[in-house]
Length: 238
Image 1 (cartoon, rainbow, N blue to C red):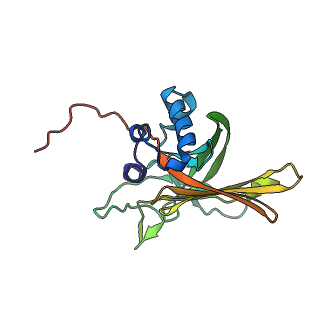
Image 2 (tube, helix red, strand yellow):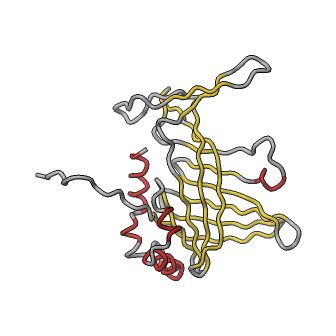
Image 3 (tube, rainbow, N blue to C red):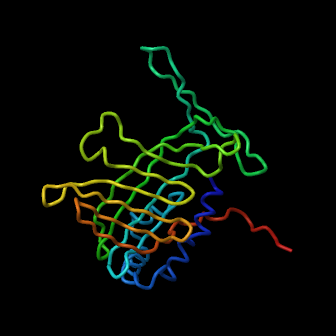
């Protein structure tokens, strides 16, 4: 999925660019805390920067930020679940993308899917608060009978999931990212936490909703993915 990674670079910049500026001056305090961690070679942020996509999102007027990191699907790990006779275990057939077409699409079984995950971690006053993982299925998607190069990840609760786990979901598509989860609050109720990121602009909204009470925050995201090192001499340009 190199083309997808390049697209995220184009939208948000790179790790070196992040170190020089902030996406929103209203979030300067949070941005400075992020830079401080990077310059101190914080092990967790450096590890996350190795993901295929890594975003840092800064709240306006607060020393808070969160990171969103994920890997694009691997061309060798697509699978199709085959129908089996009643009472027999479901069989799985592994497939892979075997041809890139000129228009950027690929040949891929429309029923193919692949497990994926997204990690969201939060920081306050430059200190790690915690994180949670979201798991879903990458789907190929179809356009004119061919698999789209842009993959879509969605999640559904496992049949065995109960309680708050049934209120956790993730979606990534060409428009943006929506991640939602629930937690028990201090009033013995439930708070639904939802993060929405618009990929075209890098803007995000963050909502905490409990009953009729809703608290909203907003800000901007930027990429902190580490650029891969170039191997060998650079090609000469005319």
